[in-house]
Image 1 (cartoon, protein in one colour):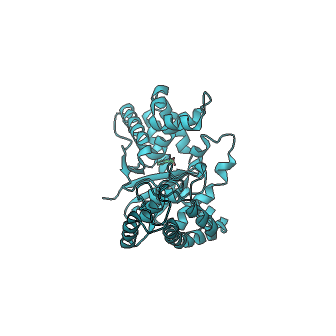
Image 2 (cartoon, rainbow, N blue to C red):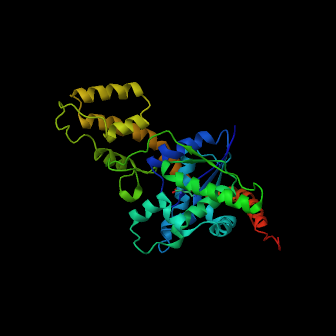
Image 3 (cartoon, rainbow, N blue to C red):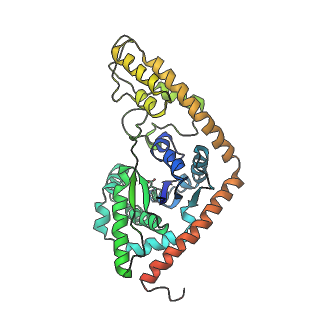
Length: 333
Ligand code: TRP
C-alpha cells in the first residue's frame, strides 16, 4: 500500500556516503510507489548554529544537489525548504503547549546530542525543543511513514504523543500517527572505524569528494592493526575496508573471495584498498559530475525548490487550519 512519507536532513553540510547508504538510496526506491516529501531542514540546522547561520544557508543548495545527483527525482518526490513553510513554525508553537520541559529533557536523542555538543548550561531553547518542530514537520504532511535510523526513534515516539494529545483536544482524529520505517542496512562507520560517518568528525567521504580525496581517504582507512605483514592472517570484523566493500562492491563473490584470502593470510591491505578505491571512484564519479552540473545551474535549483515548496505550503497550511480549529482559533480565518 502506498504511504505518505516524510524525511529530511539538516542542511548543515554536504551529504556523505553514510547518508547515501542510510537513507538516500532508499528514497530513490520509495519515490516510485509512495507520496514522498523530503524536507531540507534549514531551520532545524539553525538549532545549534544560531550564531553561525552561514553554515546552514550555504549548504541548502549543496544538499539539494546531492539529492538530485543520487536520483531523487523532483517529478516524483516533493522537495521542500523547511524555513519557507510558515505553517511548520506555527504548528510548533501550538504543539509546544502540549509538551513538558521534562519530557524534552528526557528525549534520549536530544540528551545524547546535548552531551556530545557540550552545550553545558547554554542549551539553545530551539535545540531542546527541536523534537516539537520535527513533530510539526511530520504531522504537517500527514505522513504515516518516516524512514529513520534508530537514533530517530524517540522523535517518532514524541510525535505520536503530540498527535494523540491534539486529537484529544480536537475530539476527533485530525492528525495521523506515524510509523518508523527502520532501514535494515547497518550504519556506515567512518573511515577511521571509530564511529559513524560524520562530517564534523572528519571521517566522512562526501558525495562530491574529488578523486584525490577518495584516494586519500581509502589510503588512511582503518583495517586490522595486527595485520602487519602481507603473509599474516587478517581480521574482517571491524575492518572498514571490508565493511565498505560489502556496502558498495557490486561483485559479492569477488568480495567473499577476498575475505577468505585475507583471513588465510597472503593478501595485503594495499591490494584490498586499491580494489575498494576503484569501486568508489567508479561509483562516485557520475554522482560528482551530476552534482557539479546541478550546482552550476542555480536558477534551476531554485526553480525545483520553489515548486516543491509551493506544493508543501498548500499541504501544511491545511493541517495548520485543522489544528487551529481544534484550539478554536480560526476566528479570523
Ligand atoms: N532530524 C533529522 C536529522 O537529524 C532531520 C529532520 C528534520 C527530519 N525534520 C524531519 C527527519 C522530519 C525526518 C522527518 O537530519
